Length: 120
Image (tube, rainbow, N blue to C red; front, side, top):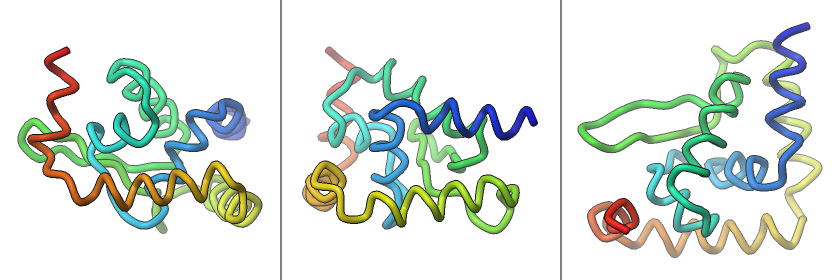
């Protein structure tokens, strides 16, 4: 039951769902997610940690960068169903579509350019 409540908590916040759906087309660095969501580094980091604890995303570290992607086959069955349901239900949502465009724009910027947010 613990896994279920971690997932429902993770999906209960609009910014976390937006962050989750931002990585639907491939992994993003934390600084890219900050750019897409327009939130502080600390806030996005906390959101991503909750999604990670729920088993909805995976994280890898490369130097100073933290990259996130949707959980794959290693995710629990309940996490896989939650991801499938979330992706299906929100694929046509205007906010999600706008975020998808922002993700594509953000991918054109270098990580160094985006990491300036850590200096503010």
